[in-house]
Image (cartoon, helix red, strand yellow):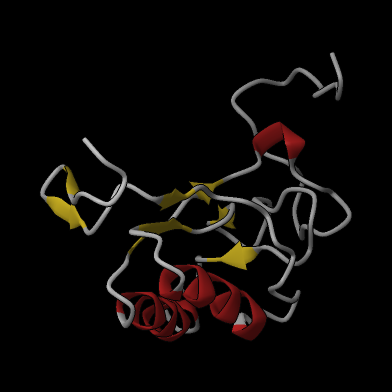
Length: 130
């Protein structure tokens, strides 16, 4: 098995075994402008990655955001699909596939950038570094 050989994840054929793991870039903006982020991921696809996994993508605009106001967002059927479609098209243009890392920060959500109180599966306070 070589890195240049195609592979499958389920029924999805990946052109090679080079995967870009999800890494926070802070290239999106709080206003959901993803232009810089799209260009960043497209460059990795153009450079030869077979699979691009988006960064931490929050799923609601109430209390899901983690530490950065510049995260990729996927919560509004009216606003998000056209941007995500463009992102996917830009990655596919170079023969790569796109997966999305979706997240709800739960107890680690950033109260300073969320509209509502944190929501988590436990009432215990999150203690960083412990």
